[in-house]
Image 1 (cartoon, rainbow, N blue to C red):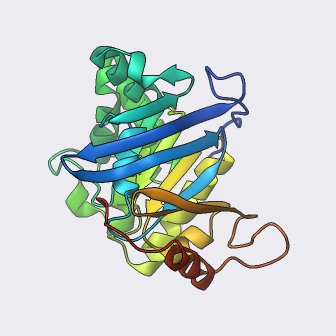
Image 2 (tube, rainbow, N blue to C red):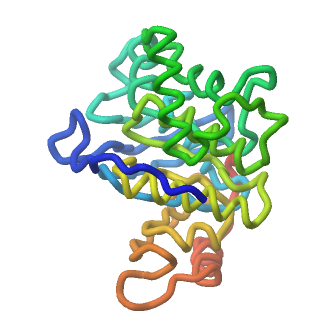
Length: 272
């Protein structure tokens, strides 16, 4: 895969003197009688690469929606880049999302009749950026993900891995503080999935804070920090050295992760 151009690493969050880009404090989310999240406490610092891993029904997708300001918690506090979401108007939250959060989804969500550069430029529609600048920045983002030769191709002319790279370019075109990737390799074959994961690592090395939401234990074990969820709670965490190592010379493997999730016990399932 074409190498990703790096950018200077961010060492602190834009609006948090302690360098935290994300803080969840006592976050609970209820849908009727179902508690999808139960007292979540989480802190993510600028420049981290984090896997949020758990089985279906563990609450990980609900947590992504709350982190991404797509949904509000029933209780608790969410702070993104120093901004307390619960104190903000709807318009201010929308602006916060546009300025600080990028999303990558499993199924790409590309406009079929639009070119790659047009799809990526759409990521800047709500930023007040002019058309010409949107196009220029979209082309730059596609070059960053190794698709400078595919600017004018439409989705039906791209492979699955290339479509996901277009989606990643759209997510990073606004230079977000946090990139949220929801099952980013789930719709891809093994080789394409590995290439996309390598791309996320390279973007992280260039300064982007990345959270990968996944049920894939092997993928999670390859990232430096794993947050394991069960029944709407954080069961435990592992801080490793990346590439599947635990930072102490040992190996964090899928079996270790599976055992940890099982050890968290069973109970009423929350939402995915």
